[in-house]
Image 1 (cartoon, rainbow, N blue to C red):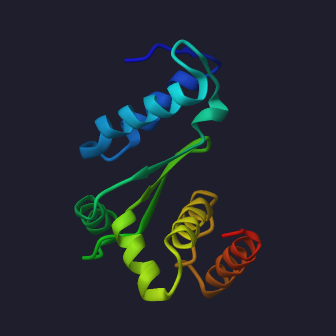
Image 2: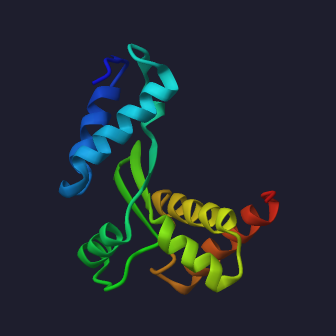
Length: 153
C-alpha cells in the first residue's frame, strides 16, 4: 500500500470516504482511492482535502442492481448512483454496461451518455435532486442540456 503525506484533515476525510462506502465495496473503494491518489501525487506525495472531493468508480450490473435495490428500492441495475458522505467528499458509481445499453436505446454515443451520467451524479452530489419536485427536475434537465450542448464529442 502506498504511503502519503496527509495535509490538514485529508486523512480524516479519506477514512470517512472508505468507511462511508457501502460495506461490500469498502475494499474496492480503498484500492481505487489509493490508485487515484498515487496517480495524482505519487507514492509519498502530499494529499490535500481538495483531492478527495469526488471519486468516480465503475461497478458491475450485479453491483448496480444490489445497490439500487438497497438504496432506491428499484429492481433494476442503476446507470449511475451518487453517495454524499459529507460536505467535502462523495462518490459517483457508474455502470458502464447499463450506460452503454441506455446510449444505444436513446441514440447517443457511449461517450456522450457516460458524460451525461457523471454530470447527473455531480448534480446530485451538489444537492440538486430531480425526483423531489417538478421544478428541481426542470432545473437539473436545463443544466444538463446546457453543459452537454457545450461539450464537444
